[in-house]
Amino acid sequence: MSEQRNIEDSILSGFSVDHNSAIPLHKQVEDLLRELIKNPIYSKGALLPKEVDMSKRLGISRNTIRQATNKLVHENLLIRKKGVGTTVARQTLTSKLDNWFSFSQEMHEKGLEFTNYSLRTGSVRATADVARHLQIERGKKVIKLERLRGLKDGPFVYFISFFHPRIGFSGKEDFTRHLYEIMEKDYATIPSISKEEIKAMLADEFLSDQLGIKVGDPILFRKRVVCDPGERPIEYNLGYYRADRFSYSIDIRR
Image (cartoon, rainbow, N blue to C red; front, side):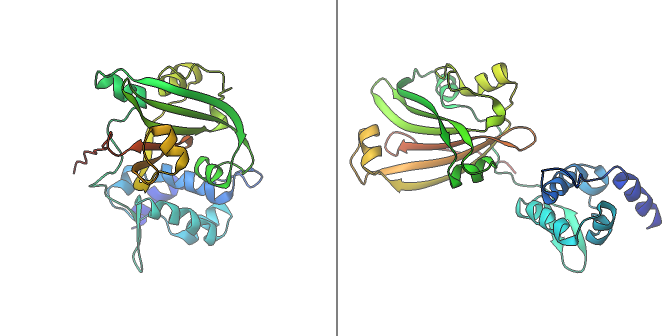
């Protein structure tokens, strides 16, 4: 037990937070925990340091430690057992796609020639929903990209994308190129993780007009938050697909 305590002290010796930073303390602790759980001693099952020990070392409240820990528990990265402690969750099933692309790359991979029926860009102020998904302040200016896309016989998807200001987009980019290629090659921003939600909905007047369907026809709605390797959001994308022209399949491996 003392040996593990010595190892633990060694691991935590470099841990610190900046009390003068504009970054909230709970977010700083969250980042520290993400690094901590990569250590083999914890990924192999050792209990994480106690909240009281971490709070003393960092000079912050246990509630702040708990808030950060809860975030990782919610993401299924940690498991907390009452009376036992907190351990790293063993990942046997993942919902992250092994291979995913921008729309144009998807069409290219299938050997299909897609068409941009309309493409609009502009600077807008982030709504509460956009701000929450991009983790920015409400009202902050972001680049908005709207695209109506499909094949030669007609459009079947309407996209709305909002981009984190961190990327540096001006809105004057050539968005007929592969979107994620622009991010990587022109702005050194690497799309690494796609967090998605999919549900069915009915077309309103605007979507029926855009997609050439009737009001009330079924639509597949996909909400996507694309993140960089540090899991920081870079794009918030809303996709509205004609249900009679598009299906979505996911391969999940155990």
